[in-house]
Structure formats: C-alpha cells, structure tokens
Length: 296
Ligand code: EPU
Image (tube, rainbow, N blue to C red; front, side, top):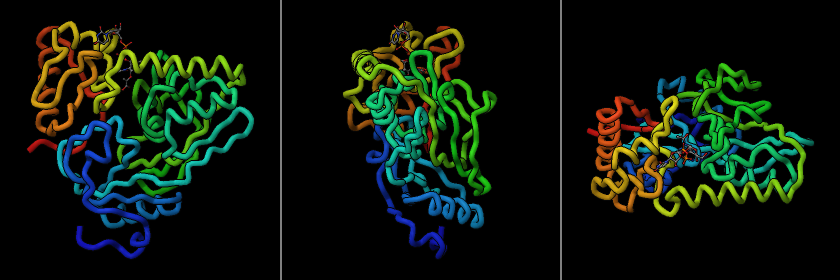
C-alpha cells in the first residue's frame, strides 16, 4: 500500500501492532495497519475506500477466536464505537464491539433471561454474530431479533435473521462483512436466578477449560455426532507439546500458548493433532477458530 487516501486519513489508525497484543492466544506477527473507526460513518468510509482502491481488508473483534500465523499486510478494521446499550423493553441492542460476556451480565442484571448460556463466551458481540456463538446447546440466532452490518459492497443493511443465514458456529457474515450491532429479544424473569445461572456457567467453564493460559477457545469444531475434545483426549494427546504450544490437559480441544509459542509451533501442533485424530478415527477435524496468514 502506498499512501492513505485523503478520505480515510482522519480515521484513527495505528501501525505495526503485534498480534500478541491483539489476540488472546498471542501468536503471529504484526498488524501492519489497524483502523479503529469510532462510528458507522467512519466504518463505512473505510469499506468504500478499500473497495474503490481494490484493497482487501480484515475485521478484528476481540481476537479471542483467532490464530494468526504471519504478518498481516491488509488493513484491519477494529470498531471503537461508544459502548452503549439501547434497552427497549425486552429488546437490547448492543454495538458490535461490546463485550459478549459483559452483555450477558448486563441483561441478567436487568432481569432478562435468554443469554445465560453466553456468560462464558469471550470476544465481542460482533464476533459472536459472525460465528453464531453458542454453548450448552444454545446459540445466538435463537435470541437474535435484528442485526445491522456493512456488506462487501459498502452498503449498510438492516436484517432480520433467517435460519439459512446461520448454522453451527457459522453465519453468512463472512469475509468483507462488518457487523455493526445486533438486537436480542429476551424474556423477563427472576433477576436472582438468572444471575445465578450466569455465575454457574462462568464457573463451569472456568473449571473445565484452561482459562488461566493464553488460548483461542476451542480450536476445532465438534464433528457431527462427536466431541473434538473427547477425540483428541482419547487419542492420548493431552499434554502433547510442540515448543511452547501444548494440548491442554484440562480440555483437549484447547491448544494453549505457554507464553513464547511461535506461529510455526502452534501451526505444527494443530496439524499434528488433526493428523493423529484422522489416522486413529478417520475423522477430519476442522478449525473452529479463524486462521489468518500463512506459514512460509
Ligand atoms: N471431553 C473429554 N476430554 C476433554 C474434553 C472434553 O472427554 O479433554 C468430553 C467431556 O467429558 C464431554 C464432551 O467431551 O463429555 C464434551 O465436552 P464439553 O462439555 O467441554 O463441550 P465441548 O463440546 O468440548 C462445547 C463448545 C465450547 C463450549 C462448551 C460448553 C465447541 C467446539 N465447543 O465444547 O465452546 O464452551 O461446549 O457448552 O462447540 C468455543 O466455542 O471456543 C468453545 C470452547
């Protein structure tokens, strides 16, 4: 990229930020250009400009479901909108950069039920929309009433969910789409018992997953009818290590970074886990995390 077009120069941006600061896992190279638009207008100007210039771009949420393998030269957009909720009766609208766990706690405080399952799922609401985040058999699309996004043509779209646009850890908001906000419709209930369930889910996750180590959540999707964690565990891989990257001994579908893991080590560990599960069970594990960049 040569120089920045005038239209986007006023939009806050930073150069050469390490992905160890931008992701929970902490591997990968540098983010060459990180744009942090403060409102929808700025986000839309970025997308429109990138389209006009023919530049591809990426969207970063909380960086909690992301494995970066190299430097990323394309511009990256991370929203820095005002973190304010709009409450209208049972409907709550959150900007896409709002913390997902924080949202589940806020709605619980208001005596609204339906987001208890989400209380242990990190990242932003935009990331949750992008991945149709879920846990304990529940997922976002079940409570979603509206959402707003910028499409890869640069148009702002208000949408209502359609089941064909959401699946297991998947939504139609793929590459080039920028989630702006979503509205969930919840059910009034007893504040104390909703809060108790939120706390219990947080605790359950804390006691079965290695949350004190750098991680990117579950690395592989659960194959139809199977649990990726159980398969990796039964293949005897808990504690298997490549350099500073290791299959967690608490939950085998978590690959953790002990602090100094390189992208190469992390990648090798993912490939080895996949190939051992493939040769033992004939099952292909597909990444649940998003993977950016390549190993050279
Ligand atoms: N299991 C093992 N060994 C392990 C891990 C799990 O035998 O090392 C067994 C468990 O005993 C259980 C089964 O596998 O019988 C399923 O395990 P768990 O209840 O931990 O659920 P999971 O399918 O591994 C899913 C989501 C998690 C979410 C939990 C709780 C996926 C890929 N994972 O995990 O989401 O927190 O349910 O609902 O869908 C994530 O999205 O990043 C994530 C971690």
